[in-house]
Image 1: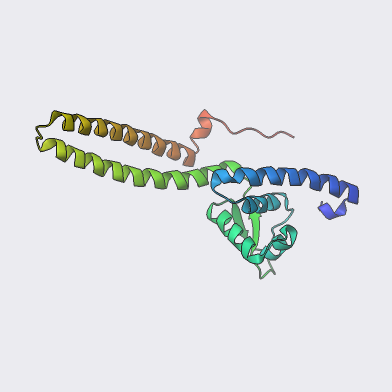
Image 2: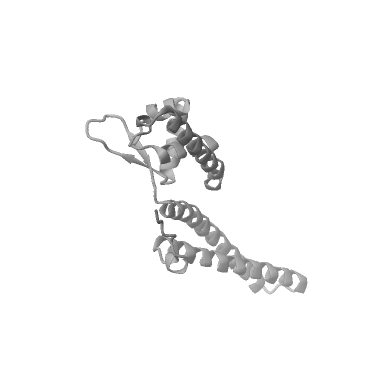
Length: 187
C-alpha cells in the first residue's frame, strides 16, 4: 500500500513518525562518517516503498541533484544503498540495504581492515628498527631501556591489531553471530 492511498490525517500522522525516525538516523550516521543530509537521504530511502531516482529524492528532500548525487555516492561506497535496475527505466534507481547487520559489517570491516594493515606495517617496521638499534650494542643503558619500553608498547599494539583482524574475520564469516546472535524480529 502506498502512503498516498491514505487519508490526509493518516498521512500526516505517519509522516510525523517517519520524520522523527529519519531525524534520529541522520543524527547517528556520524558514526559512519556520513553527513546529516546523507543520513536523512538514507532515512528517506529506508521508508520508500520503491526504488527512487536522484530526481525523486531531490524533490522529496528539497535538495539539489548535485547534493543528492554526492550523498548517494557516499552511501553506495559504504554499501548502505544499492543501485537497482528496473525494466523500462533509463535513470539509475536506488534502494536502501535493509540488512543492517551486513551494512555494519561491510562498513567497519572496510575501515578497520585498512587501519589494521597500515598500522601493522608501520609497527613491524618500527620494531625491526628498534631491534637494530638495540643490537648495535649501545653502551647507554638508559637508551636501551627506553628502546625496550617502546618495543613493548609497539608489541602490545601489534597484539591488538592482530585481535582486531580476527574480529573483522569473525564479522565477515558471520561467526560473530554464534557468540552474539542476531535479534529475531517478531511481528
